[in-house]
Image (tube, rainbow, N blue to C red):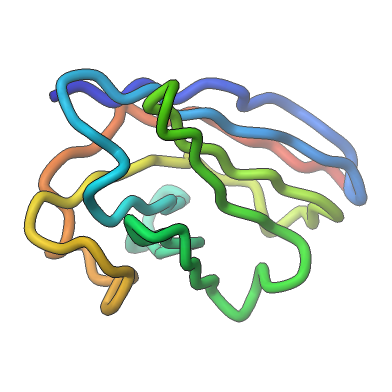
Length: 125
């Protein structure tokens, strides 16, 4: 199983980025998927999670601004990030679980079995 993120970059505050995560060797239609982010010196934190049925959940800090989605036919996960803030500067990672289909407990790193290498997002003020 391999996860490959893309779409990171540099934007000004208020701008948007759309991250993609191509998934190989795994069916994203069956299991929980998630997006996480991490800055140096801090723990990795959950941003959004999506279940096999398409139901989703978000961290309070991004609700109303970020949207997680997936395209099963392309085995691809997305994260649309709007109204970005400087505190959104981080390395963003996608993750895939093998043990559950729903997005319950999606913020726990232990739920996930596979991780991508990350894509950097920078938001300037």
